Amino acid sequence: MAQTPQQRRANLKFAKENEARMGKSEEQLKKRTKEVQKSPISPIWLVLLGFVVFGGLIFEIISRIFFR
Image (cartoon, rainbow, N blue to C red; front, side):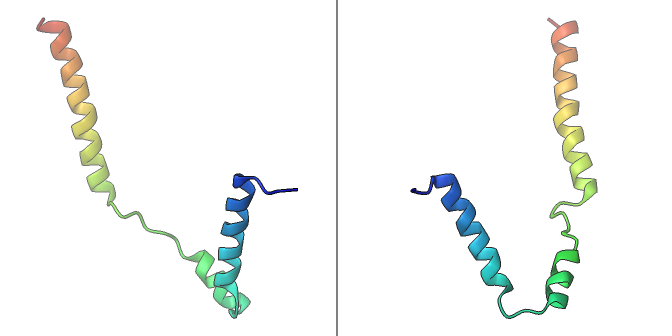
């Protein structure tokens, strides 16, 4: 039976992960998985971006309601 594209992608992903593990001890693998990935954007910038986007949206809605 032929592989579906979804199965093929899953197999390639699994093979890539397995290849990365080859030759490494269990301790090295555990250390790698315990590392917490840090967000590339700080929370302050996320709050500022949210304020600009949603504040602008709220301001636009208010201005359309009251200042037709």
